[in-house]
Image 1 (cartoon, rainbow, N blue to C red):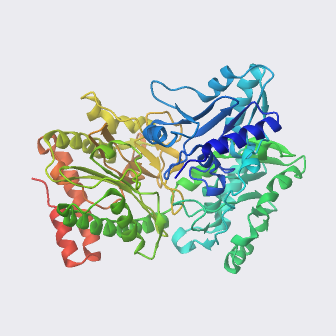
Image 2: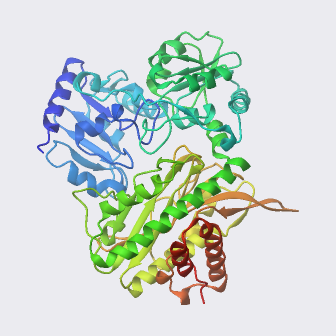
Image 3: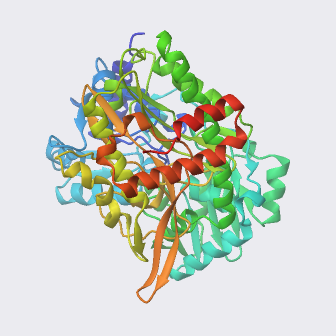
Length: 597
């Protein structure tokens, strides 16, 4: 199909000229800074032709004679291909050839010229950084240029999916309790009201969900205002049902139209002190606030990240259901592989079907990453009809996937050998596995951050001059987003300490371009290990339930402690999943979890 992006680019330049804009910066997100915004806000993808199922990482810049799109190293290959013939060129956001977007715009604009953005799709923090640099160089900054309102006539409508209640017996906490805890944090920040913009925060606070607003996340498009006397959910009326209206009324939450949020904050009394998170709140909303603004609010994300005992118990159920689906999937892979009939796209489709066969699974937690051999070396590879390959010959299959169960969110990666693995593949797999185990076994004092533990997962690779550059662990939500903050385990410093109840991934990897990729991922929950004269110490409980590929383990590289850990883990997998499987499935799992010699 012929690309029409050149026509779209022409429309944009005409709109820029009509509104006195010399360059426009276009984000890939929405007024809530969502990682995966609804189609209504995916105009950058429509304009550039660069689309990504598992993330919208990409920011475009258009001037009178340039059209550029920045993205990170996960998407370089994909962006190069998709931008061909669109009028856009790719710019690297990271790596040795990286170019800073704001610096590029500053260097290519003259004093007196105007740079425009749609302030509803940039956070306060991001816009302030741009504004400061542009101002220092005599460049005007217009935060009210909603470019797609002018050039995108068939733009998809905002999602109108109906909400449903997330059973509070599964959640283990009422909305009233959550709002009370939020308001305690608000007052701790010397404010008396808060506006929540992040959709996962709002879904968590209200115990409401939907399917379809956000790809692979059961959250919904809304804003939430709270103070001691008033609670307001800004939402399109079509999204409410009699049941969800009654739920909101039970907790004294009134509703106003989604588009009314700017008018509402503009009319707040001057003495009100409104807490907003500058990383999650749109600049367009900030510009409308009529009362005193207080920056902060990151503690709400911390409240959400700490799962209570009820959540953790239900997440264990989700893990069992996920383990059953994965057992059936990998059994089918082994059965059908010799026929040469398997493809990456076909496997992704089948894995989704197996998960969704369980009625408690509402969606995948992200679009499955199924990479055979060289495609496994592309960290966020997405199999498409154009890129699809047959699973034939010897090699490594990397499968990164997850489910959105009402009992919790799962995320797991397994790399398996099909055919005969090479000695090098076994060696590299074992290096990654050793790091994965080292992190899972960690014991650490209260106050430790993920940044301080990250080296545990990388150490064995580094000793051989090998490395991976993505994070080792991200926070995971509870039937919300698969990626959740504020905690993480990565090279970059993060001041958030790991607390009991936080669920984080453990996913080291190794990627050899054009050859193969290896990643091993479990979800781990921080829990209390002991209290000594030196204080509280924590450890991780492994939540995920599925075996590692013993055919890829180089036994001579594993210590006795590591083999013991694998055997104990495999014994738990076998004990938890066997009662849920057919006799044939249980026999297959037993063979995959045989104790290591």
